[in-house]
Amino acid sequence: MSSLDHKIDFAVIFSVKNANPNGDPLNGNRPRTDYDGLGEITDVCLKRKIRDRLQSDGYSIFVQSDEKKTDGMTSLKNRADSDVYGLGKDAFKKNSKDETAKLACAKWLDVRAFGQVFAFAKESDAAGVSIAIRGPVTIQSAFSREPISVTSTQITKSVSGEGDGSKKGSDTMGMKHRVDKAVYVTYGAITPQLAERTGFSNQDAESIKSVLQKLFEGDASSARPEGSMAVLKVIWWKHNSKSGQYSSAKVHNSLTVNPDGSFNLDDLDGLTPEVIDGF
Image (cartoon, rainbow, N blue to C red; front, side, top):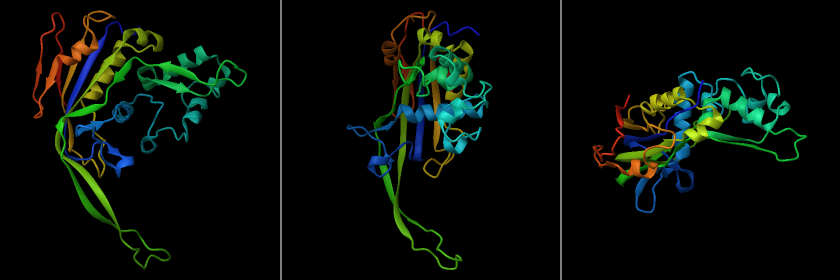
């Protein structure tokens, strides 16, 4: 399958209502904010959701979350060294760095999309101890369109007592935080020059586009109840060449998103985006 033959820029507009989209563990798990009070969802968090949706669609994913593991591997090293994926036992140890990178990119979609650092080089290889793969898909942290309002609620957590369970354990107090209502937007791009190195294809790009439409499906938790986060629109700019007709900065700046989720698009001569409704 040939690699991606055109540059792509994209944006995702989504809403949050009575949910904690990305808690900050260094701030009591309160929703992340920047210094201006805008809500923030990190690129790492968004990539995790993309990986989960791709995995749900049946794609092989290297960096799997603990609760969604499908192969029983206890670590990334075990996954790389196993023969579950048809690479052969200890295939990464037996091959050169270039061969190892090709094997990983061919097998795992998230590796050829986002890249990966493998610290599993051959013991006899004195040139280094890791294999770095740069992926063509980049995505920015998402920010709300206006400062967010955070509601904090004190809750009581009960646990079972010790012994035969006849005695109730002491209750403990805790806090739960949520964003009342906000609209966020994130931007991303897919670079053909890096896609050539990983084998990321036009079909892979379509797979990414399809999961962006349903980014928060199957992602429910007590902090993010089902339906509390929803993709409103995916804006997909498909350039007519590998180098692109415009820079990503200019393309992204052509989109203006309002606090209510409505948006405006400036005209870019020769580049008309595809506007896709959320799932």
